[in-house]
Amino acid sequence: MAGPDPRVHVDLACLAGLEARAAGFDFLPRQPVGSALAGRRASRLRGRGLAFEELRAYLPGDDVRAIDWKVTARTGSAHVRVTREERDRPALIVVDQRQAMFFGTVLNMKSVTAAEIAAFAAWRILGAGDRVGGLVLSDTGVASVPARRSRGAALRLLDLVADRNRALSAEAPAVPDAPARLDAALARAAALVTHDWLVLVVSDFDGAGEATLRTLTGIARGNDVVLAIVHDPSAHEIPDKGRMVVGDGRLQVELDLADARARRNLASVGGERIARLVAWQSRLDAAILPVSAGEPTLPQLRRLFGAPPRRRG
Figure (spheres, rainbow, N blue to C red):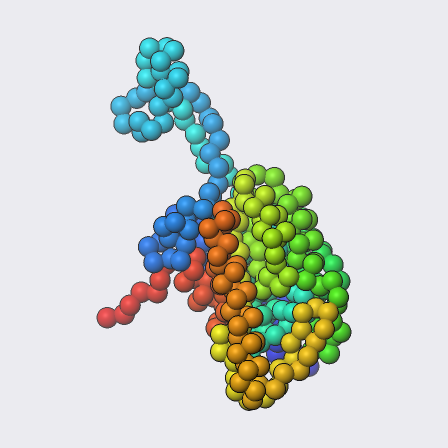
Protein backbone atom coordinates (compact mmCIF):
# COMPACT_ATOMS: atom_id res chain seq x y z
CA MET A 1 0.00 0.00 0.00
CA ALA A 2 1.41 3.38 -1.00
CA GLY A 3 2.10 5.91 1.71
CA PRO A 4 0.69 9.43 1.83
CA ASP A 5 1.84 12.08 -0.62
CA PRO A 6 4.63 13.70 1.46
CA ARG A 7 3.67 17.13 0.13
CA VAL A 8 0.14 16.76 1.51
CA HIS A 9 0.40 14.60 4.63
CA VAL A 10 3.21 13.29 6.82
CA ASP A 11 3.57 10.10 8.80
CA LEU A 12 5.80 9.15 11.72
CA ALA A 13 8.23 7.21 9.52
CA CYS A 14 8.77 10.31 7.39
CA LEU A 15 9.38 12.59 10.39
CA ALA A 16 11.60 10.04 12.13
CA GLY A 17 13.63 9.69 8.94
CA LEU A 18 14.56 13.37 9.08
CA GLU A 19 16.80 12.67 12.09
CA ALA A 20 19.74 11.72 9.86
CA ARG A 21 19.51 15.04 7.98
CA ALA A 22 19.05 17.34 10.99
CA ALA A 23 22.39 19.15 10.73
CA GLY A 24 23.81 22.43 9.51
CA PHE A 25 21.77 24.70 11.79
CA ASP A 26 21.48 25.56 15.49
CA PHE A 27 19.26 27.60 17.79
CA LEU A 28 22.28 29.20 19.45
CA PRO A 29 23.17 32.83 20.22
CA ARG A 30 26.47 32.67 18.34
CA GLN A 31 25.32 32.41 14.76
CA PRO A 32 27.66 32.17 11.76
CA VAL A 33 28.17 35.28 9.66
CA GLY A 34 25.55 35.15 6.92
CA SER A 35 22.91 33.50 9.10
CA ALA A 36 19.60 35.34 9.29
CA LEU A 37 20.05 35.24 13.06
CA ALA A 38 23.47 36.91 12.99
CA GLY A 39 23.89 40.29 14.64
CA ARG A 40 20.85 41.90 16.24
CA ARG A 41 18.64 38.83 16.03
CA ALA A 42 21.34 36.60 17.51
CA SER A 43 21.48 38.81 20.58
CA ARG A 44 17.88 37.80 21.27
CA LEU A 45 18.92 34.18 21.82
CA ARG A 46 20.39 33.58 25.24
CA GLY A 47 21.54 29.99 24.87
CA ARG A 48 22.32 28.07 28.04
CA GLY A 49 22.58 30.08 31.20
CA LEU A 50 25.64 30.44 33.42
CA ALA A 51 25.66 28.87 36.86
CA PHE A 52 27.88 30.30 39.62
CA GLU A 53 30.56 27.81 40.62
CA GLU A 54 33.08 29.55 42.90
CA LEU A 55 34.64 32.83 43.99
CA ARG A 56 38.45 32.83 44.05
CA ALA A 57 41.48 35.10 43.93
CA TYR A 58 42.36 36.60 40.56
CA LEU A 59 45.07 34.72 38.65
CA PRO A 60 47.14 36.02 35.72
CA GLY A 61 45.27 35.25 32.51
CA ASP A 62 41.78 35.45 34.05
CA ASP A 63 39.18 37.45 32.13
CA VAL A 64 39.04 40.87 33.79
CA ARG A 65 35.31 40.96 33.02
CA ALA A 66 34.86 38.19 35.59
CA ILE A 67 36.26 40.32 38.44
CA ASP A 68 33.76 40.76 41.27
CA TRP A 69 34.41 44.40 42.13
CA LYS A 70 32.38 44.38 45.35
CA VAL A 71 34.36 41.47 46.80
CA THR A 72 37.59 43.00 45.49
CA ALA A 73 36.83 46.28 47.27
CA ARG A 74 35.84 44.52 50.49
CA THR A 75 38.90 42.22 50.66
CA GLY A 76 41.47 44.54 49.13
CA SER A 77 42.56 41.93 46.57
CA ALA A 78 41.14 41.04 43.18
CA HIS A 79 38.63 38.18 43.10
CA VAL A 80 36.81 36.63 40.14
CA ARG A 81 33.49 34.84 39.88
CA VAL A 82 33.92 31.50 38.12
CA THR A 83 30.89 30.24 36.24
CA ARG A 84 30.09 27.22 34.14
CA GLU A 85 27.63 26.83 31.34
CA GLU A 86 24.45 25.17 32.53
CA ARG A 87 23.99 21.86 30.80
CA ASP A 88 20.23 21.92 30.57
CA ARG A 89 18.43 24.13 28.07
CA PRO A 90 15.03 22.50 27.56
CA ALA A 91 12.98 23.25 24.47
CA LEU A 92 9.25 23.44 23.85
CA ILE A 93 8.08 23.22 20.24
CA VAL A 94 4.58 24.55 19.56
CA VAL A 95 3.34 23.12 16.25
CA ASP A 96 0.23 24.37 14.45
CA GLN A 97 -1.82 21.68 12.68
CA ARG A 98 -5.11 23.53 12.37
CA GLN A 99 -7.24 23.31 9.26
CA ALA A 100 -5.99 26.74 8.11
CA MET A 101 -2.54 25.16 7.74
CA PHE A 102 -3.88 22.65 5.20
CA PHE A 103 -3.10 24.87 2.25
CA GLY A 104 -0.41 24.97 -0.40
CA THR A 105 -0.05 26.11 -3.99
CA VAL A 106 3.54 25.32 -5.00
CA LEU A 107 5.29 22.52 -3.06
CA ASN A 108 4.02 21.58 0.41
CA MET A 109 0.93 22.19 2.43
CA LYS A 110 1.80 24.65 5.20
CA SER A 111 0.92 21.88 7.67
CA VAL A 112 3.61 19.64 6.13
CA THR A 113 6.27 22.35 6.27
CA ALA A 114 5.36 23.02 9.92
CA ALA A 115 5.64 19.31 10.73
CA GLU A 116 9.05 19.12 9.04
CA ILE A 117 10.32 22.19 10.91
CA ALA A 118 9.20 20.59 14.18
CA ALA A 119 10.93 17.32 13.32
CA PHE A 120 14.22 18.90 12.25
CA ALA A 121 14.19 21.09 15.37
CA ALA A 122 13.38 18.20 17.72
CA TRP A 123 16.18 16.05 16.36
CA ARG A 124 18.69 18.91 16.37
CA ILE A 125 17.83 19.92 19.93
CA LEU A 126 18.00 16.32 21.16
CA GLY A 127 21.30 15.88 19.34
CA ALA A 128 22.69 18.84 21.29
CA GLY A 129 21.89 17.00 24.52
CA ASP A 130 18.87 19.05 25.57
CA ARG A 131 15.37 18.04 26.62
CA VAL A 132 12.63 18.44 24.04
CA GLY A 133 8.86 18.45 24.36
CA GLY A 134 5.99 20.16 22.65
CA LEU A 135 2.43 21.25 22.15
CA VAL A 136 0.47 20.30 19.04
CA LEU A 137 -2.34 22.65 18.15
CA SER A 138 -5.33 21.43 16.13
CA ASP A 139 -8.93 22.49 15.57
CA THR A 140 -9.97 20.07 18.32
CA GLY A 141 -7.62 21.33 21.02
CA VAL A 142 -4.03 21.29 22.27
CA ALA A 143 -2.11 18.11 23.09
CA SER A 144 1.21 18.05 24.95
CA VAL A 145 4.34 15.94 25.30
CA PRO A 146 6.55 16.66 28.36
CA ALA A 147 10.14 17.66 27.70
CA ARG A 148 12.51 14.72 28.03
CA ARG A 149 16.08 14.04 27.01
CA SER A 150 15.25 10.91 25.07
CA ARG A 151 14.59 9.76 21.54
CA GLY A 152 11.31 8.31 22.75
CA ALA A 153 10.09 11.77 23.76
CA ALA A 154 10.93 13.16 20.33
CA LEU A 155 9.12 10.27 18.66
CA ARG A 156 6.04 10.77 20.85
CA LEU A 157 5.92 14.43 19.86
CA LEU A 158 6.32 13.65 16.16
CA ASP A 159 3.74 10.85 16.35
CA LEU A 160 1.30 13.39 17.76
CA VAL A 161 2.14 15.83 14.97
CA ALA A 162 1.62 13.11 12.35
CA ASP A 163 -1.69 12.07 13.92
CA ARG A 164 -3.07 15.62 13.83
CA ASN A 165 -1.69 16.10 10.33
CA ARG A 166 -3.47 13.00 9.00
CA ALA A 167 -6.79 14.40 10.25
CA LEU A 168 -6.53 17.43 7.96
CA SER A 169 -8.72 17.35 4.87
CA ALA A 170 -10.04 19.74 2.25
CA GLU A 171 -13.53 18.48 3.10
CA ALA A 172 -13.24 19.20 6.83
CA PRO A 173 -15.85 21.69 8.09
CA ALA A 174 -14.74 25.08 9.38
CA VAL A 175 -14.38 25.33 13.17
CA PRO A 176 -15.79 28.62 14.53
CA ASP A 177 -13.22 29.21 17.28
CA ALA A 178 -10.17 27.81 15.46
CA PRO A 179 -8.30 31.16 15.28
CA ALA A 180 -8.61 31.60 19.06
CA ARG A 181 -6.92 28.25 19.68
CA LEU A 182 -3.51 29.75 18.95
CA ASP A 183 -3.78 31.93 22.04
CA ALA A 184 -4.94 28.92 24.06
CA ALA A 185 -1.86 26.97 23.00
CA LEU A 186 0.48 29.83 23.86
CA ALA A 187 -1.18 30.21 27.26
CA ARG A 188 -0.41 26.52 27.86
CA ALA A 189 3.17 27.14 26.78
CA ALA A 190 3.50 30.07 29.19
CA ALA A 191 2.34 27.83 32.04
CA LEU A 192 4.81 25.07 31.16
CA VAL A 193 8.09 26.93 30.70
CA THR A 194 9.97 28.41 33.65
CA HIS A 195 13.26 30.09 32.75
CA ASP A 196 15.98 29.65 30.12
CA TRP A 197 13.85 27.53 27.82
CA LEU A 198 13.87 27.66 24.05
CA VAL A 199 10.30 28.12 22.81
CA LEU A 200 9.86 27.54 19.08
CA VAL A 201 6.43 28.41 17.68
CA VAL A 202 5.75 27.00 14.20
CA SER A 203 2.53 28.39 12.73
CA ASP A 204 0.96 30.58 10.09
CA PHE A 205 -0.30 32.64 13.06
CA ASP A 206 -3.90 32.64 11.87
CA GLY A 207 -5.85 34.52 14.54
CA ALA A 208 -2.79 36.25 16.02
CA GLY A 209 -3.46 39.62 17.61
CA GLU A 210 -2.56 41.81 20.55
CA ALA A 211 -3.40 39.03 23.03
CA THR A 212 -0.94 36.78 21.18
CA LEU A 213 1.74 39.43 21.39
CA ARG A 214 1.18 39.92 25.13
CA THR A 215 1.48 36.20 25.83
CA LEU A 216 4.64 35.88 23.74
CA THR A 217 6.12 38.93 25.44
CA GLY A 218 5.59 37.27 28.81
CA ILE A 219 7.23 34.05 27.65
CA ALA A 220 10.18 35.94 26.16
CA ARG A 221 11.03 37.72 29.43
CA GLY A 222 12.95 34.73 30.72
CA ASN A 223 13.23 32.45 27.71
CA ASP A 224 14.43 32.35 24.12
CA VAL A 225 11.53 32.63 21.67
CA VAL A 226 11.73 31.84 17.96
CA LEU A 227 8.69 32.32 15.73
CA ALA A 228 8.74 30.41 12.44
CA ILE A 229 6.02 31.99 10.30
CA VAL A 230 4.96 29.35 7.80
CA HIS A 231 3.50 30.94 4.69
CA ASP A 232 2.56 29.97 1.16
CA PRO A 233 3.94 31.85 -1.86
CA SER A 234 0.35 32.77 -2.73
CA ALA A 235 0.59 35.32 0.09
CA HIS A 236 2.55 37.33 -2.47
CA GLU A 237 1.82 35.72 -5.84
CA ILE A 238 -1.71 34.55 -6.66
CA PRO A 239 -2.18 32.38 -9.78
CA ASP A 240 -4.40 33.97 -12.43
CA LYS A 241 -6.54 30.94 -13.13
CA GLY A 242 -8.49 28.29 -11.26
CA ARG A 243 -10.47 28.57 -8.06
CA MET A 244 -9.39 28.80 -4.42
CA VAL A 245 -11.32 28.15 -1.21
CA VAL A 246 -10.42 30.56 1.58
CA GLY A 247 -11.85 31.02 5.06
CA ASP A 248 -11.44 32.66 8.43
CA GLY A 249 -12.33 29.69 10.61
CA ARG A 250 -16.02 30.62 10.58
CA LEU A 251 -16.94 31.07 6.91
CA GLN A 252 -15.49 29.69 3.70
CA VAL A 253 -15.84 31.11 0.20
CA GLU A 254 -14.63 30.00 -3.21
CA LEU A 255 -12.82 32.64 -5.24
CA ASP A 256 -12.44 32.78 -9.00
CA LEU A 257 -8.74 33.55 -9.50
CA ALA A 258 -9.39 34.91 -12.97
CA ASP A 259 -10.87 37.93 -11.19
CA ALA A 260 -7.98 40.41 -10.81
CA ARG A 261 -9.65 42.17 -7.88
CA ALA A 262 -10.03 38.88 -5.98
CA ARG A 263 -6.33 38.14 -6.56
CA ARG A 264 -5.27 41.56 -5.29
CA ASN A 265 -7.43 41.29 -2.18
CA LEU A 266 -6.16 37.80 -1.37
CA ALA A 267 -2.50 38.76 -1.81
CA SER A 268 -3.06 41.84 0.32
CA VAL A 269 -4.51 39.83 3.21
CA GLY A 270 -1.67 37.27 3.19
CA GLY A 271 1.06 39.85 2.79
CA GLU A 272 -0.33 42.08 5.52
CA ARG A 273 -0.34 39.22 8.04
CA ILE A 274 3.32 38.43 7.40
CA ALA A 275 4.28 42.11 7.51
CA ARG A 276 2.40 42.61 10.78
CA LEU A 277 4.09 39.63 12.41
CA VAL A 278 7.57 40.61 11.25
CA ALA A 279 6.90 44.11 12.60
CA TRP A 280 6.51 42.55 16.05
CA GLN A 281 10.32 42.26 16.02
CA SER A 282 10.57 45.79 17.42
CA ARG A 283 8.12 45.02 20.25
CA LEU A 284 8.93 41.41 21.07
CA ASP A 285 12.23 40.03 22.35
CA ALA A 286 12.22 37.15 19.87
CA ALA A 287 13.58 36.02 16.53
CA ILE A 288 10.80 36.18 13.91
CA LEU A 289 11.54 34.37 10.66
CA PRO A 290 9.28 33.53 7.70
CA VAL A 291 9.55 30.00 6.24
CA SER A 292 7.96 29.26 2.86
CA ALA A 293 5.91 26.14 2.14
CA GLY A 294 6.86 26.70 -1.48
CA GLU A 295 10.50 25.67 -0.93
CA PRO A 296 12.19 22.61 0.62
CA THR A 297 12.31 23.02 4.39
CA LEU A 298 15.86 22.02 5.38
CA PRO A 299 17.74 24.46 3.10
CA GLN A 300 15.66 27.27 4.58
CA LEU A 301 16.50 26.22 8.15
CA ARG A 302 20.18 26.10 7.25
CA ARG A 303 19.94 29.52 5.67
CA LEU A 304 18.05 31.01 8.63
CA PHE A 305 19.79 29.26 11.53
CA GLY A 306 23.17 28.25 10.13
CA ALA A 307 26.02 29.06 7.81
CA PRO A 308 25.36 29.94 4.16
CA PRO A 309 26.29 27.29 1.56
CA ARG A 310 29.90 27.32 0.44
CA ARG A 311 30.65 28.34 -3.10
CA ARG A 312 32.48 25.84 -5.23
CA GLY A 313 35.47 26.80 -7.28
